Length: 242
Image (cartoon, rainbow, N blue to C red; front, side, top):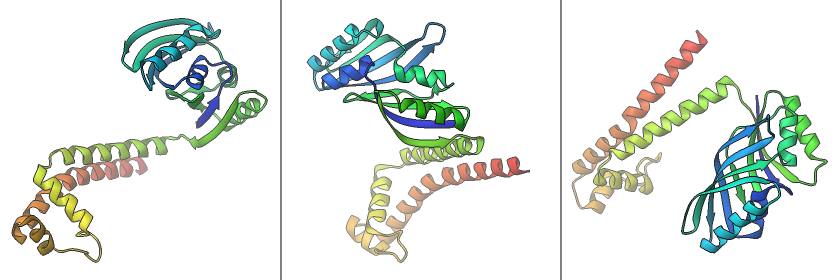
């Protein structure tokens, strides 16, 4: 599987027209492409520099010739949420024609969209990019990544470790958080050390033993769950190899 991240400027997209004409940006976290009707249904989040910018941007979408339906779901201040159905734009038609599919939300700012699209084979991705070359629409490939089980699982495990570290940091007391932050900033964990327990103790006006105890408590809260997550990941790797 191949995943492409593209920046696209579409001539026939209502959202592109709206963000190009007004100081408003859009994100579409939820979407569905109706192959039988050649329609793209979106849930659009809009944010503008002010209320007027949002209203004007939404009006552009509502009146655009490619918009088949528009429902304003909510609006407050300089933000809004809407359900929009579009016809198939030239770029979307090209992607669908070459067996491509959407893999992430759209982001639209300043008339330019960020797309995440996937293909089952390199040849499909190559044919799509070649076809886009003949369009009036502009595009740029930001990244091209092969998606395979090893890559996906590595990313999942990395996210798991990151979440574990975040959970550990939330368990720190204010004193532990400030002490370990200062220790890192001052170079206590550098090799060689740029500061000592005595230096930290003097800064916090407490004893060396008190600083050491605080750091050990903070280190345990951060490291213990992280080590557990890493050990779990290593066991999974060994099981997969066996």
